[in-house]
Structures are given as C-alpha cells and as structure tokens.
Amino acid sequence: MSINRLEVYVLAEEHASGMFWAQHGISFLLKIETDRGNYKLLFDAGNNWEPIKHNLSILKEDLNDLVGLVLSHRHYDHTGGLKGFLKELNGEIPIISHPDLFKPNFVLPFRDIGIPYGREELEELGAKFILSRDPIKVLPRVITTGEVPRISELESKMTIGTYTLENGKLIKDHLMDDSSLIVKMKGGSVILAGCSHAGIVNIVKHAINLAGPVRAVIGGFHLISANQERIEGTVRAFKELGVKEVYTGHCTGLAAECAFRNEYKENFKQLAVGKIYRFT
Picture 1 (tube, rainbow, N blue to C red):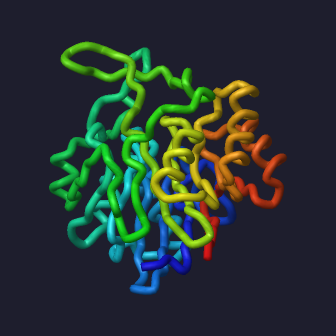
Picture 2 (cartoon, helix red, strand yellow):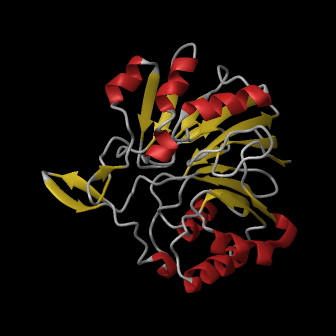
C-alpha cells in the first residue's frame, strides 16, 4: 500500500483562526488517502472535548468512521477530551498508547496532571486499549514510534520536574510513555508529535531509524523553557537530519518558534486550530 495524500486538520491548539475555538492541548485529525482506500485517524484528544466538537462542526467532519485514536502520552492536555469523544461515537474504538498511560504524574505542590479518567470508565464507553512499549503498525505505512531512546546529548538534561508513584514511593518521572506517530510517504515521512517529552531531536532520529528520511514534523516540541543554546542546537539538528518542513506550536515556545521560522522561512508554519496541512 502506498499513501498518495495526507491531510492533517488542527482540532486543538493554543491558537485559532476565524470562528474556531482554541484550548491548551493538542488534537489532530488525519485523513489518509491510499491506493487501497481512505482512512481517518485521531491523534490526541486535547484537554476538553467541547471546543473540538465545535471545531469539527465548522469543518463538517464526522469521527464515526475513524479507524482509531493514537495518544502521544498521558498528560491531561492530550487526554482530557477522551470521555467526551467516546460519548460521541457509535460503538467501540481502538486507542493506541503506552502501558504507562494510566500511571499518575504529579507536579509539586501536589497536582495530578495525568489522564483524568480511569481505564474502566473509558472502556465502558467503548475504548479498546492497545498499549505497547514497542512501535505499533496502526495502518500499513503508519506506525507509532513506541518508546523513544534518549540518545541526544543536546537533550540529555531535559526535564519538566514531574513525579510519579512507584511501589509506594514518590520518584522523578521521565515520561517514558511519550511517543509519536509516523506516516511514511514517498517524499519522506511526516511525524506527528504531542509534547516531545522524549526530546524532539531524539524523536526525529528514532523515526529515521524506523522509517527513513523525514519530510515534516508537526506538533509541540516542548522548548518553552529551553535556553538559547538548546533551541539553536535543535534547529541545527533538524537541518542536519534533513527535515524539510516544520509545523509547530503548543509547548514549543515563542523563542523556539522564531528560531525555526528564521531558518525555515516559508517552510515553517505556526499551528492554529482550523488549519489544514496537505502532503502529497
């Protein structure tokens, strides 16, 4: 099977255009046209379903023909819309993620920023969880990265200072559940990233190992608190790794967005709800 066309609809993001509603979080609708048929996938569910529902109505898109939902990681701004999403569907749906999806994740003073629902209540609404540390083939030529090796020296000290509970002890949480989605096309793969807690350079390197050259990277890069050295190093790494197009927002931060825009010029786009990015 070959993918002839990919459309990425921005359903949730901090910026919005026209009559669309913004929110803190990420959600993308993927429409994939192949020589064997057409498929629709959802990537992440934002933190609230109501704005996504509103945005879908403007786009005149129906999610009942989805083949599945991929969750990048457990944080509430990527999973909070799950319950509302499931209530809208007519039947069961596969939800692909990591085994740590329901593991608590705290910031101090104590606030749980992980998934706000239990597994059973979501399964009662039709969720069929497929949880794996390894890459999963969602469709032919569409795979998850699974756990991403943390190998980049540039990102070796990266942390957002969160904690989890393990055997009754509070320990630092390195969010090993962070994963991305790869759509392999003839002109190079398109990567969908949620928050890039694994490190966006690590993600791109891993995607290249799994699927070859990368054409575009879309999503949050979590450079919002990075220093200038790391931001410049990330932009330089993208160029060295052959990334041709960058579409970013959410947790990337203004300084990093400016650095990418200066380097990528017309091949840089800031994410905004209502935008549709097309790849052929």
